[in-house]
Image (spheres, rainbow, N blue to C red):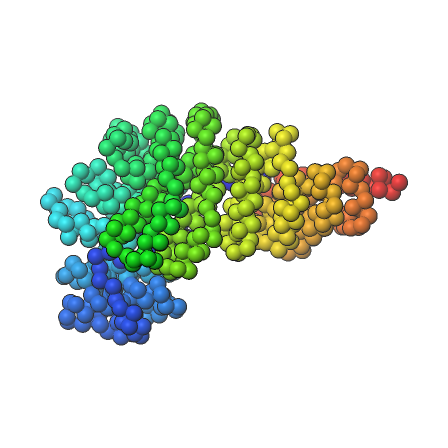
Length: 588
C-alpha cells in the first residue's frame, strides 16, 4: 500500500535537468540571427579552418538544440553530433573544445536517452574520460584547465543521468579518485568541487548493492573516509558541498555502514538547508531585471540562489530516501526523533507553500527565468515526496495535520488547474498517506465535500497512478457521515474503475482493482449505505466481477509479482464474502 517509496533513482530520465542547460557562462552566445540559420550550414562550419568560425558554429548549435523544434533530431541523425564529438577529441584550441562540449551537453539534456545512447556509440564518454585523466594528471592546474575539467564533468553528469553504460565507464576508468581529490582540494573553486561531487552523486545513485560500488563504501580509506572527513569539518565547508557529500555517503550505504556519522553530521545539514526560502529572492531578482535589466549583481545573486535551491533539494531528497531505506530500525527511530524534535514536517510544509501563480508571472515577464521556476517546482515536488515518506515512516498524525492537509488540497487544486500532473501525482499520494494514517490512528481527517468531488473526478479520468491514489483516498474517507450525499458517486467511480481495469487486462493497473474493492468493503459495509446499492445496481455488478477477477488472475499470474497476486487473490475472496454478507440484507 505504500505509494511513497524511495526517491526515483532510475537511469534514463529524459529531460531531467540536474544542470542548467547551457554552455559555460564564459562561452560567447550566438546571436538570434545566427541561431535561425539552417543546421547544415553550421555542420560545414564545424570543419572551417578558422578557429573562430568553428567556435561560432558550436555556440550556435548549443542554442539551436534548446530553442528550435526538431533540432535535436536533425543534429542527431545528421552529421552534427559526430562532428561535435570529433571536435572534442581532435581540436587543439581549448575555447573551441569548450564550445563543442557545451553544445553536446545541451544535446544530451534536450535529447535525453536517445541522444545519450547515440553519443555513447560515438565514444564520447571514452573521449571525455581520456581528456579528464590528462588534465587531472597535471599537479599544477591553471585556470583554463580547471574550466575545461568542469565542463567535462558537467557533460559526464548529464550522460550518466541517461546512460548506465556511461556510469559503468566512469566507475571503471579510475575517475573516482580525481573527483575525490577535487572534493577536498583547497585550491579548486567551490563550483568545481561541487561539480565533482555531483558526478560522484550521479554515478552512485541507488547503488548500495552494486558490485562496482563496494570499493567506495565507508572504510578507513577511500571515498567513504573522504566524505566523513569533509562532513566532520562542517564549519569551514559551504552547505552546497556538504549536501553533495551527505547524498553520496547515503548512496553508498552510509545509513548501514556509519549510522553515527549520518545521524550526527548529515541530519543537521538537512535542518540547515531548510532555513532557505527560495521564492522571495527569486522574485527580487526578477523585479530587478524587469526594472533595470541584468547586471553583474543579479548574475551573482542568481548563482547563489541556484546553488542554494540545489543544496536544499539534495538534502531533502537524502532525508526522503533515509525514511524508507532498508536495514534495521535503529536509524529510523533516530530519524523519527529528529523529524519530530526539529519540526521538520512543518518546515517542509512551509517550503512547499509556494504560490505557483507567482512562478507563472515570472515566466511570462522574463522567459529566460523558466529554468529557475522549473527548478523551484521540482524542489516543491521533492519536498512533498519527502513529506509523504516521513508520514509512511511515522504512521502518525499530529498538530501539524490540518496545516499540511490544507496545503496539499491547495497544491492539488493548483496542479489540476494548470494541468501539472506530476505535481498532482505526488500531492495526491501524500494525501492518501495522510488519510490512511489518520484512519489507522482513529483520528480521521474531516475531508470537505468539495475535495472529495475533485478526487472523484481524478479517479474517473486520471493516469493509473493518479486514479490509484484517488481511489485510496476515497476508501479512507468515503464512509464519513457528512459525505453520504456523495455515496452514489463514490460507489459508481469504484465500480467503473474495477470494470474498466479488468476489461483492459493491464497488469500495471491491477492494483486499482484491489484498492477499489477494498474501498467498496470499507465505505459501504454499514447498513446506512444500503440504499446506494439499489440506486447503482451495485450488488449485481459486484457479482459480475467474481468471474472476471478469477479469469484475469489466471491470465496474469505469471506476469505480476507475488505480493500483488496475493493481494488480488485476497480481494477476490473478500469480494465473495462481502456479496454473501450483503445479499440477505439487501433482499429484506
